[in-house]
Length: 330
Image (cartoon, rainbow, N blue to C red; front, top):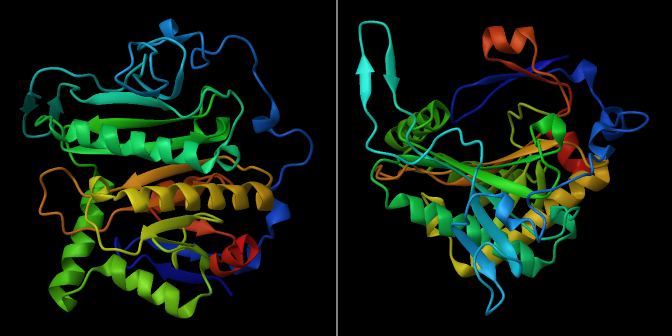
């Protein structure tokens, strides 16, 4: 019989439609996948094409090489087609119905490797560490801009997840307002702390480690599990064992640990589901908040379609239990 599960942080309801239960092979498309079709042609992110992007704002480079030329291992550039752009302080205009603000912020691309077809599981641990270090570097650099309230780091893997270029890359968008999703999570965190005097994410982590049925992989610094109220099949959260409010607090040892668990988890997704499209999103405390939060990463495979019921109600229908997803990924 189907089961309704409630996300303990945001209160979002999920329908676990057990009568529609699917195995990993049921999510793999027959024939050639969209993600297997390579576009080819010119790539602005490949070495030698550095002048095709806006000037880099950060890079890990070989000694003696200059910005915007070859010799880099990770390179960060402004997005050529930015959603938000640097500028003066945001100006708000509102009336009884509408509110608007100029689009001040930042939109950057983190080019994760010079290799055009190298995915996360194929990168060396050393290279993955550089990627995470670049995330932290840009997150902290943008924190000094008083116009910015929040920085969203994300990765779209595969065309169905929104990746328009094949070359491995992640992105960040820094906004002058705190996203609604984060505000809802902060409300849930504050409510739990008021009622129980504890961090709800720490409590979730302890429960998952106790029950073990939804654990995918655990390391010294991080735990990856399929959340109790998973919205999507094979949804995975990666949470640091140490309570930290914002991503900028991550230590050198944790950076190596996060690099390792990202390699491990994306490799298991690829092997179990034949390299599915997914979105990877960082959730962290807003800049300048009271920071009562617990940063984490969510990996959301794009295996089902969000349709009328979901749009109309805010509920999600998941045809696969998180327990079976975790078992298959283990």
